[in-house]
Image (cartoon, rainbow, N blue to C red):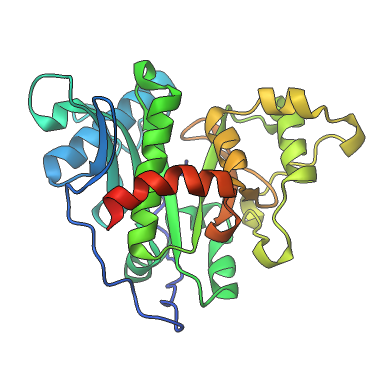
Length: 293
C-alpha cells in the first residue's frame, strides 16, 4: 500500500515495439466463475464505490490505516488513481439485492497505457519503477494494487478466482510484466526479519529486473545472515498474498518501505509473465481462455 501523495511523476512511454493492445474488455465482462462467486470488471460508479467501501472496511476498519486522506462520512478508500484504473471485483451472487452489494473482494489494475497518460504508476512513490520500465521499453507493464477480500471470503477459492480474472485480463491486454506492492503488517521491518531476509537472500530479482526502494524511504530487508534463515519458518511468517506471488514465480525488489499511513511494511513484486510457473499457466490459463476470447 502507499500514501496518497500527489507529487510529480515520470511519464512512461508506450512500448515502441508494438502498439497498445486493441482488445478492450467491456465493463462488466465476466472473467471467471467458481460456484456462486464471479469475477469481472466494475461497470459503473456504484460498483467502483462498493469496491472502495470494501477497501475501507479492510484497510481502515480492520487493519487500522489512518483516516487523514478519507472523508469520515463516506467510508471509502479512494484516491486519484481510481479514475484511471480498472477495478476487478468479486461478486457473491448468492447475496440478494443490487449487484454492487454483492461485492466481496477487489483488485485494482493499472495498465502502462493509462499510467503514461496519468503521469506514472502508483508504486513510484515507494519504488524506482520508472527505472524498471525504462529498462524494458519493449514490455507492457500492469500494476496490481489495493488487493483485499472481506474476512469471511478469504479462502483458496476466492484467491483462485481473482487470479482467473487477472490472467484473463492480462491475456486480453497483452501484458508482459505484472508488478506492484505487497505488504507485511506493522511499521517495524525487524518484526519480520526472517521473512524479509528470506526474500532478500533467495527471492531477489536478477540484474535485469532489479528494482530498488526510493532512497528517502529505503529500509534494508537483509536483516539476518543467510545461514540463520529457516526457510520453513520464513514462509510460515509471510502474508498469504506474498506467498501466493512466490508460488507464481515472482521475484522481489531491493529494500522495503514503511508506510505509516497504512501501518504496513511494503515490498515490491516483479512478475514477468514468461516466468510464471508452468503449472499455474496451465491451471489459470484453462479457465482464462473461456473468458478472455
